[in-house]
Length: 264
Length: 150
Ligand SMILES: Cc1cc2nc3c(=O)[nH]c(=O)nc-3n(C[C@H](O)[C@H](O)[C@H](O)COP(=O)(O)OP(=O)(O)OC[C@H]3O[C@@H](n4cnc5c(N)ncnc54)[C@H](O)[C@@H]3O)c2cc1C
Image 1 (spheres, rainbow over the protein chains, first blue to last red):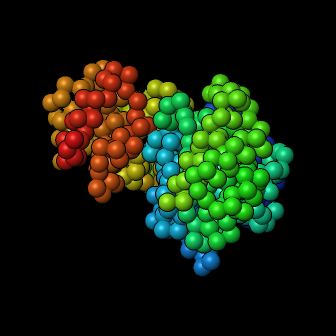
Image 2: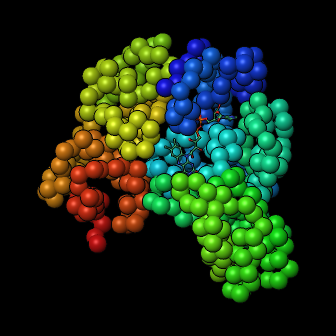
């Protein structure tokens, strides 16, 4: 059970950040769905719901997604669909149900760097950046590589517009369980990006497989080979959803499937 | 702290703690159709509508509902009431514990899905668990209610 000492609803990100650093026991509240599964007293709960972070904006060359955007808005946004097709929707539709996705937020998801996260896998393939109040703008890939969590407010996620075609593939023991493995592939002017998540570690790019496929061009045989390279280059671990060996085999199939889908 | 909620069309003040979830507050004030079950955000039983969107009241802070419109099953009126008849006609209401959450989700779904199909209905309702029925009869009833044929 989570209990609060003090509680505030800052009206801006500046105010939220100042409050966050004012007290060691201060904690930001996004949707609050994940926090609630723990047991702790939060000295100062900083509710971000009034801080102006719930938006999906067309910013010219890029699309900006405010941290307090619900997973459901992320899933159903026509703007995101128009630019990135169905992969964004596909990357969240297995998360419990519409009712949870109406509450849980994309900013908390990305900030928390959950290894199991489906949308992080998709955003990494989409070459997204993040914007932290104090830390500024950085590539999501670099943020994911950082150990631990910065004491900062994640303000927004930024995806550059381009002619992207994408595919999100996942395998789960049941529809809304955490993924055994998830794979996202994006093809645009800069080439193909392959991201693999729920290994069960944090999503990472399969760099060697990307180099291989970008030097060859896409066909079924090359897609199979790229899957094999991706299976070799990343580490696949075990947990109660699947063994490392199983995940490694699975990555070959899901990478191939995603590559063939974007090639259509 | 005091918040104002429009529950089932009636504006009322509620005395809450900021760390309380909506399900606790609604039940404390007598809206007992709102059920508690898994308490981990996984089963959909506690679903209520906040400004017409279905949310898990076990995971939604009551303070966030301030000045919003809440619908519980007690507040369903007009055409929406006929959903119950579709479910009863198919004989799918068994223990009934998950029904309030399911009914509210279906009502939201009907407003939200523009061209519903069997697949999009199943996808929309994956967050509503039922331990009695096996879903087949429920799906039949809901498809009829939504005007979707097999
Ligand atoms: C039952 C359940 C099942 C789930 N299943 C899946 C699944 O299958 N796949 C999947 O991908 N995800 C899954 N999730 C995770 C979900 O998608 C969200 O990632 C998660 O709930 C976090 O979002 P939130 O808004 O609830 O975060 P919160 O609980 O509000 O916060 C989580 C953490 O992020 C911090 N935080 C919040 N907002 C910010 C911000 N703007 N800047 C910095 N820090 C911030 C908080 O202080 C806290 O430490 C599941 C979650 C639940 C509860």
